[in-house]
Length: 193
Image 1 (spheres, one colour):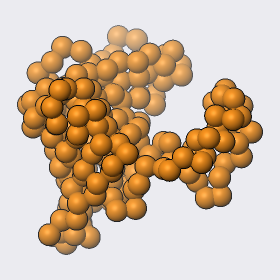
Image 2: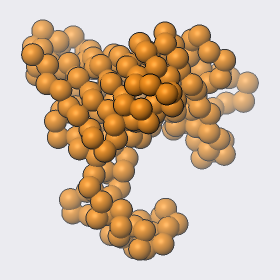
Image 3: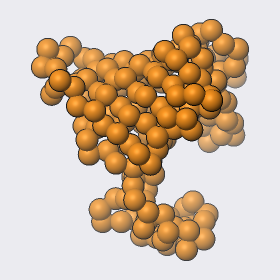
């Protein structure tokens, strides 16, 4: 039986399949998950430092966003753009050197997208009904870094003054973010998607 992880605050339920709950995956270099998104549900911004992610929408409409963390040479098409099928607009953000331009992609049933290893990304249900997506990952030990949890939920906490200066927010906002409940990840093992 595969453990189910419900994330009430973000409106999703993730059913991951890893080597620890399906031992046959050990040494195979893959992981898999089914994600159910409530209306307005989302998977918060995160990255997988040891895996690329292939996401396909089974039902509903998702907004997929990736933040490319490398400079794109003029005239070259990023690998991510080549793998977004059945739709017309690519989805990603370019790096500091390219102006941090935001690109988004609305995915409908049957659309798929690939997030390269280490790419910060998220998905949000932008449809009028629940959505379902499946994700395949290129490692049985994907790792996950949920951005908000990393910045505002570390133990010990990152100094609020440092974050306020780095993110250019009022110190009171940073203190408030430190006090909020973080996105639960303890039951998701290696993945949040």
